[in-house]
Length: 181
Image (cartoon, rainbow, N blue to C red; front, side, top):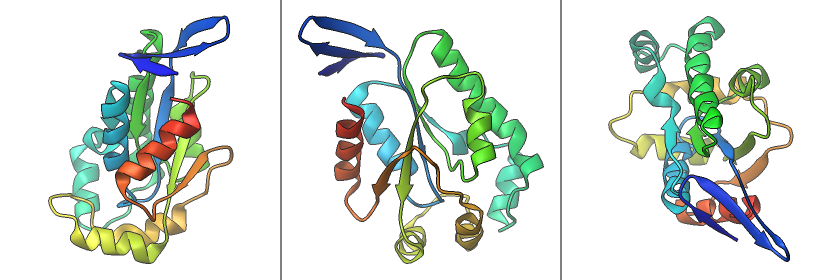
């Protein structure tokens, strides 16, 4: 099996076909979504969309101040992310989205109008993630919001679950193997 450019190619006895893959790497803040997503994008050549880059200025300021977002804050953001995935899908391209997607209704909103989205749930315990957040610099997310993220988290059904107690490169390799890439 191999991957070339924007499409995923499968090879086997008598087969050679391509398809697109939309992959969402999800989990609480500080779990490594962007880091693992970047490694996946480097290996596959697929574009990575970091959901943090699509928040409104008002949402960023709320999070910086340690104020959890409401569903009303999130809906336009989730719709922007869904539009990115739908555009990639319409072009027949594969893509990776790094997004918290903590609740099922958020995941449903992200998947609206799409089929076959692959979910990668990066899972870690509060102590490990808190230690990572304490070392992180230059990010607007207030570490004080970590508890609210764990409180809001609804573990996804049918997702590939990756425990984050390892190096990011190892995690990315596990994802690639599980996806057959």
